[in-house]
Length: 112
Length: 110
Image (cartoon, chains in turn brown, cyan):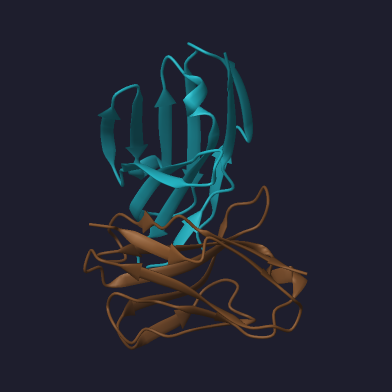
């Protein structure tokens, strides 16, 4: 099993550009999550999904969109990138909301 | 929502020393995990421990759910233990949203 994979590992965007961060898991997990981690800080939840076709906002959803068309994939879309979105983005998955979470390696995004 | 507090915020040790990290939470939980974020930023699962005690090599963890705290013990610390340790909980009651503490930053000197 590859676990949770994320692409790209690094990306530099200009202000106003858009991009999609990819996340996939091969553990047949129902729940998937997107977090951001700013320097020296903990993780903040952006969006989460409890199954294909179902998504919901977390603590910091503004400026982001998600979709969950399959169990395996949970892409995060940034529209009109802003410097405040410079961060490390982590995707995670779990079988249910009360089970162990597993994290991907992260995507380091810089917006200039 | 549920509050998660970790202490101490920073810890500096000499190799070989023991340490205890604490995670307090403000409400009952159905899920508690400890993670280690290594200096390269990778988040590594240490323990899934909503209650009870577990051990894995030099690390062990205890969660006392009725008193709303969890402890992570690191014995005979090594330089590879350096990094940030996070506690994450999911409150009982159906929100399914994990809440992370701010972490304990550990530096182990050789």
